[in-house]
Length: 278
Image (cartoon, rainbow, N blue to C red; front, side):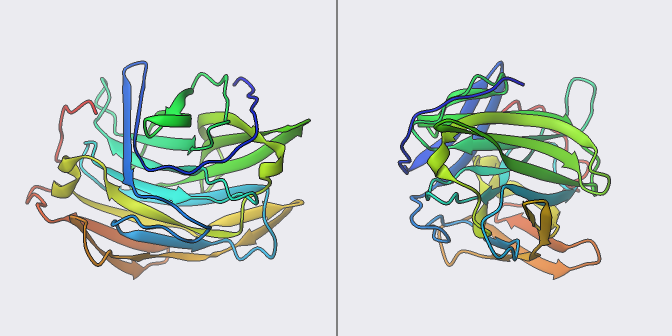
């Protein structure tokens, strides 16, 4: 992993998230403009989460299991995070086509819309949603039903720069799974706020024909060595503008959410294979 540096500034834009790096395409979201922390205008199912920490935190751990999904691109399960300055990195998981060995694959994403974000991490490229920022992604083999956590961290502060890192670990054991990427932001960006939102988006039209079931675990925020465990996230359907609908239930593992597109296929989502590369 390389380190990163940056310059000050935190603009917010509308974009279509798409990262192309070394033949890997990340088409992440049709996200509408984002305002103050806790607000969004995306016409997609909206996720709400909290760590219940009393203060901002240095590290966020955001668990999710993909229980069943087609081996295809199309739906993005994303978390917003808001730093103390108001700049908003985002992160999440996307089911993907099987790899050359027939192994099931998830893509993890960690990106910033901050025009002054910089990176020298091999997993990241400049640009977010067609504009300024940094986008990082990695693909890794996964087992359906296994809980994986996005671990997002304000890893260090050096002078005017803070280094933000994103990794994937196996939730039950804490074992490292994959490094997503890292980028620098102004040191004044600060720590993660203790609660925010997220979204579930059909970022390709193919997503409107998919059925995916995921289980959200409880977010954890860590500050000064103390871990604060949050409540199970909730998901709310949009009143209009999305091809997706959701149903949820609380299980012993977490909040299980099934997403169904309005053109959902009849084939079993666990056996529906495709050779799509995006």
